[in-house]
Image (cartoon, rainbow, N blue to C red; front, side, top):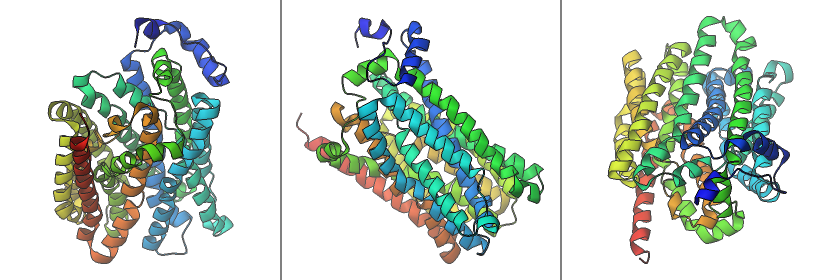
Amino acid sequence: MTAETATSPPTATPMATEAENDAVRIHGRHGSVEPGEIAIGVVIGRASEFFDFFVYAIASVVVFPKLVFPQFDPLTGTLYSFAIFALAFIARPVGTVIFTAIDRRYGRGLKLTLALLLLGISTVAIAFLPGHAQIGVASAWVLAGLRIGQGLAWGGSWDGLASLLALNAPDTRRGWYAMIPQLGAPVGLIIASALFAFFVGHLSAADFFDWGWRYPFFVAFAINVVALFAKLRIVVTPQYAALYQTRELQPARIRATLQAEGRTVLIGAFAPLASFALFHMVTVFPLSWVFLFTRETPARFLYIEALAGIVGVASIFASGFLADRFGRTALLGTCAVAIAVFSGFAPQLLDSGLVGEAVFMVVGFLLLGLSFGQSSGALASNFSPAYRYTGAALTADLAWLFGAGFAPFVALYLSSHLGLISSGLYLLSGAVCTLLALGANRRLEMAAPR
């Protein structure tokens, strides 16, 4: 990037949306944005998305089985709730296809605005969801539709800011910069868990199911507004514009991307499966097990989850140092082996009382932070510049779908029928897929012409 590019103010373009042009007028006088500002924008955006994610995930355990599926026993109602939970992950790749077309034709500002608007509307609408007692089975269909809306929006909210951050990182600090966007996940979890724990612990059951559970969904809408402005602030920067012009952050057609980079997309989707499977095994699934099969109160476990999230934040930071010293691929492979070992004994700890639950969550989040901190776009550098933006988006969509979308349902179903030990099978399969994908990527790199 030349000095002229880095210091000249951005200008509005004919293809820019009105939101982008407004952002240019507001921020253009400030010139380029420092890496720290980019990092803050990335973390705010990711924290917003994951806050929405965890608010819904917690409600899918403690609210929706009773509100939407009261005609079933608690276990069956939770399984139905988890089936609807998975719809967002199925819809996410479809959202990427739709919003990539909008991006190509109308610009990233309109794409992000529409995506976050859809996410905010879908999320806040859940706060007004009538239950089975009011509208019968239509309640489940409405919830499913709103969940699909969230998934489509998540596909469209891909902004490339993490790529912008990584591409501007020094070669010796790639691992450190790669972990920064991942901090949004535990931050979103901590806020969502603490908020739900407060309402569950301080309201009567009647008040909580009447109105208390709805409040976090209103908060999610407000956070989405902040995230939108944070993202638009970065989209209009000279650095972003320069990378767009060099095609580093330019959306390509989906079909062309798959034809040119299909193998890389597939390997990249399976490489982080251990991390993404563990993601739900230490967040959504344990809450459902404790809520259904123990005498533990959901408020106390949610506080445990929030505290474990702090361990996850520290662990993600540590992943940056370790990746820069030993390599991202080596760290991901080592973590996959550790997760495989974890899957063989850890789930049983959830039946061991408060101490067992705490150990499960702390160790789980320790491993999650180390692996998840480096899992996003681990193989993004394998994409050619022309397809990097769209290829990375598709890779993330498929990784979440295969690794996480069905994890709560599968883990709860297996555990309730075959015992807790069986839930580790899903986690083990993710670890195996990660090791196989990393091995395949290594063979391709060795076979590539030098």
